[in-house]
Image (cartoon, rainbow, N blue to C red):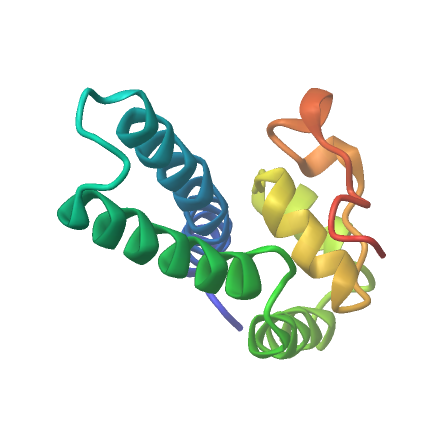
Length: 134
């Protein structure tokens, strides 16, 4: 059986990683806004090249971080299936072990077919489990 510490680490790292991927898009838009507001002419080649590259990175981030990656969902299904070899529900496991997960982890778990109740989501008051369009 996976240890409490290992499960908590996986839960935290997976959620934070997914959220950071979403945040990169925000920062890229901010970079474009700063460039647009700069005194450098829009016809400046270096400025145009930089804006082009930022837009390319944004588009790639949009592809990879808007939805949950299927590999991540498959990993989550295996992790939660492992837990269910020992517990009736994921909530039972979380309750017994005193584990709280981030909303993003709960979203990924739901996408993999393993719902987690709001009682075990540490940021539940801000949590919309359907954010990824389930």
